[in-house]
Image (cartoon, rainbow over all chains, first blue to last red; front, side, top):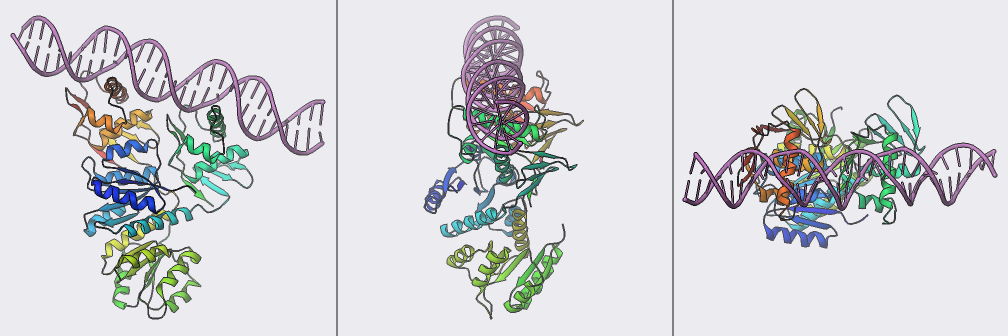
Length: 233
Length: 233
DNA sequence: GCTAAAACCTAACGAATTGTAACAAGGCGC
DNA sequence: GCGCCTTGTTACAATTCGTTAGGTTTTAGC
């Protein structure tokens, strides 16, 4: 696996540089921002694995941001806050944060908590061979897609690669570059079209309405998002 | 879903009963133990979803127990400890614990942290995030705008960026400079026009009367202001 | 009030991006 | 060989979205 991407959102430059240093040393890629707006703009093209968020931001309510990140992006969200009241921690965690670290903090503990979160996140994708989502069941051992009525449609190896990529990271932006990498395609001019075609074929097997796809959304200029509720078996 | 099973392993009876009370109230089933031996015996017949473990136990080294629980049982392990040194926390987390809570602790926070862990353990339980305002419902996961009668209009990624910006800061002036930063546009001469066009397109989808917009007001020379009553779901 | 300049709106165009039908190359079983 | 399936490639259609070019509205100066 490549280095996990950690984003840092904090309005204090000193804390940002400190965290960047520590996290890069610990083996993470980092992106840091001082404003929520700039951070959200970056989300259009990057998919962080872990988001460190300071709640006291000048330009947004941090809690709604946390809520959105956790629900929509499916990212791991860790709040870093100067507010130490229990009630703050409880609401932060209930809004979807995965952890809550109080300032001042020890760098080593931040690293340890990030690692703990990544570990448990990676433990979930069991090497199960079937996945259920929105009335469909994908049998990767038999290369068969089963609808809610039990009717089966075979899918090919290439289609399965794309489908697995989506099912491994539902509700997260998958850039074309990421697809290229994990589908082993050369970064050729024409491979972009090949990828489109794979997705197009997958969409027809999932009986997507071309005008209004419900499961595989295109993000113009960025990539794709798979919107199913996935359970691996 | 049935009530998750939480085990408590702590040698202080007062803490055990307190945790049992709080957790039962919060909707969990509990089993509590004062000794590691009894706890391990119970594992033969029960499979806990979450294990709360106090490190200072009379009959075992807590850390090796944590390690075994996390690795072999695959359980969610939360350490509760009187030792507050950073090094303790780091080694605890690195040995496989999912969280580390320091005594004395607030019961509400324990509940919140248990819930946060259970939530991330489940594959993708959450439903996408939406915002409601003035008869409209914006589904950012599906890129769809739904009116009060339930009719749906798709919106594009660029339109969604603007809409999200508004919904994040309703009833507040948003300057063109802020938009530029948030939408990742270069400060070009023509970007102002691009901005205008995005808003114009959004206005038509919101069926605004151009002569008298109700939701997106233009503040001549300053920026825009969104006047909806927003509720995020 | 009037006029001019600035700011803003939006229809229409076009470049970039994406969708997909149709074709072609290769593999496999017969 | 032939037929069938898989999958990349090509070509063209469709969509997105910035840009241009006027038109309209607002403000400032008088």
